[in-house]
Image (cartoon, rainbow, N blue to C red; front, side, top):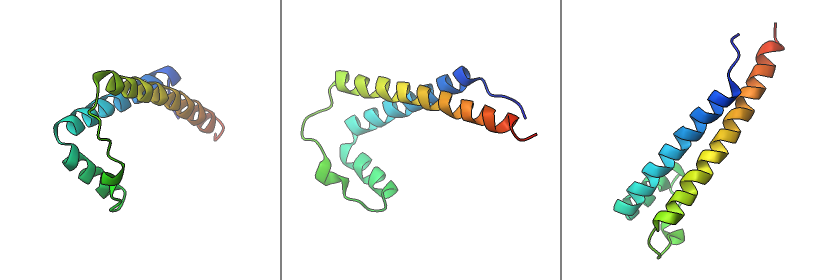
Length: 92
């Protein structure tokens, strides 16, 4: 099996999660109730309206979440690729 570049996998996952976070922040800023309803479907009907914040989203808070999720994705991608490489080379 081919080995994965750990840094490339980390960057790819980190960038993907950051983009998804930006899209989520944008949709929540534009359509907060519809976004909560959409994500409520992912949680099998859990009413997310009860945890909805009354404060508007600030750009700084949104950026904090985007960067944080990007970093978490980078770390997760590096860990995933490292484990994949060990598993792939150990099964010959």
